[in-house]
Length: 130
Image (cartoon, rainbow, N blue to C red; front, top):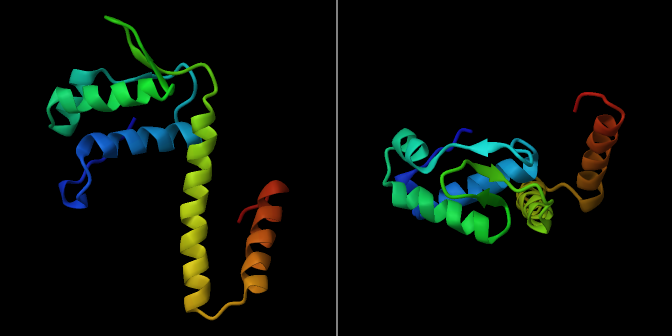
């Protein structure tokens, strides 16, 4: 599991960890049952206080995305949390906003933009390259 933090981002480090783990779960990089690094291990890798990792893991557990047991590993929840689907929708919405912004700036019509998306979608569904 690769987590990258940025002190220049202006976002609390624990939030950066939470958002990246959510993204990894939503995108399928982390699957139900996958183990996450221990609190101390991840803290050492990121050169941060273990309490920061603990806070991130606690929040993810509260949201139903992680299961933690005292003295045992922290794992991605086996129950398909609806949050994972919401996170997927949030990610796609951000990308759609970026695409729409670029399309407007480049003077593409909505129809042209949707046509490009539709073409790529169909290619991917058929197993072709985008």
